[in-house]
Amino acid sequence: MAAILPMRTAAEMALIERYHAEKATLPGAAEARAAAFERFEKAGLPSKRVESWHYTDLRNLLREAPPVAGETSALGALEFDDLPHRLVIANGRLVDGKVSAGVEMLPLAVALKAGRAALGVAMGEAIDSVVDLNTALCREGLFLKVTGDATLHLAFAEYVEDRRSVMPRIIVEVAPGVSFTLIESHTGPNGVAYQKNAVVELLIGEGAKVEHIRLNAGGDKALMLSTLAAKIGTEAELSSLNFTTGGEISRHQSFITYAGENAKLRLNGATILKGRQHADNTLVVDHAVPHGESRELFRSVIDGEAQGVFQGKIIVRPHAQKTDGQMASNALLLSDEAAMSNKPELEIFADDVVCAHGATCGALDDSQLFYLMARGLPRVEAEALLVEAFIDEALEAVTHDGVREALAARVSDWMRARKES
Image 1 (cartoon, rainbow, N blue to C red):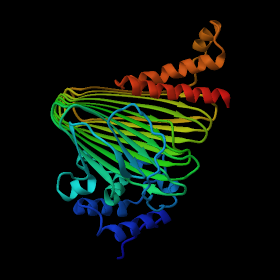
Image 2 (cartoon, rainbow, N blue to C red; image 1 turned 135 degrees about the vertical axis):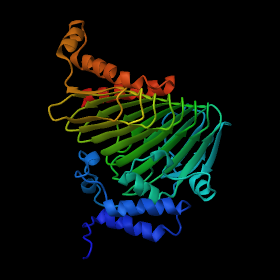
Image 3 (cartoon, rainbow, N blue to C red; image 1 turned 45 degrees about the horizontal axis):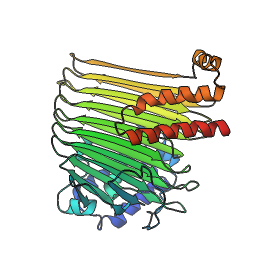
Image 4 (cartoon, rainbow, N blue to C red; image 1 turned 30 degrees about the vertical axis):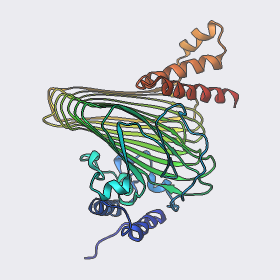
């Protein structure tokens, strides 16, 4: 009996043809790429029938697979200009920058061919079609080996005038005992429907401390997919913030695996949306060993007809006793048409744990607005003050003063633009 194959979309057919056309020239990791492509070819682009993609039907949203963006030497204004160590990645390719003495940098192709890096190690047991697509097709990217305390800004910028795609891969290996801050900024032109599928893998050694900050300030027509995959070693710490204000359609995924005991995670999100934007924050925190601690706090402010999504899952494996996991998602809706979908989950297979989750969704508090307005503040300023304070709690995860202030300023500017519109 012949096998029944699913009907392919135009985008899926183009991506499958691209892999077959390019696989002979893709740098390194041939087995990992082939396995990832086989999974992608079987599953296709995720649709709302896939539980973890129920609120973001990528199969319907991604109607075509545009060609890969070409090289560019045109560099415009970039975020966080005051950071001394920065790598500029334009259209998916490294074009400029420097790293500190504690960071070794190799092009991804060189690292893969030399066996210095492997694709997908930080994903643990998680499987995702979008990550598989990046694994199968990624050509450009970086391998970073961090052996000394350092701060590094990865400035991703797209310079395209029509539909193009980029698919960068960053692999970061952090040595035991090191403190490392990784800052990502993603920018691109308005009015251009470019596509991005970026994956960052963090392999965090024993006792290391990593702070990760990501800013999505992509163009207003962009489809932006991003994944953070991390393995946390014994007594290591990871603090990560995803700040989303750009993109027409965006989804940020976090797959975190505890690889050693007494590790700590702080995973925060701050999202501000307007118009008809759609932003999805999805995370899976896998407590695979005992004595792990995790804290997740996501704050969303949604205006116009925009839609926000939060999907969070904490998994506690049978032998992961003494796990402490707390997760919360809170949303403010600033218009009657704004929408938020919350889906927090706990999968607990151990009995000596402390885990909880919660989600709220509502409008600004009338009593707080009345209090501020009674003291002389106009309504728009009172609203701005409450929104900024609401988002600020999520931004507390950022220890770098300049970066935190720059992100807070974005919230203020967003509220000011709302007032003027």
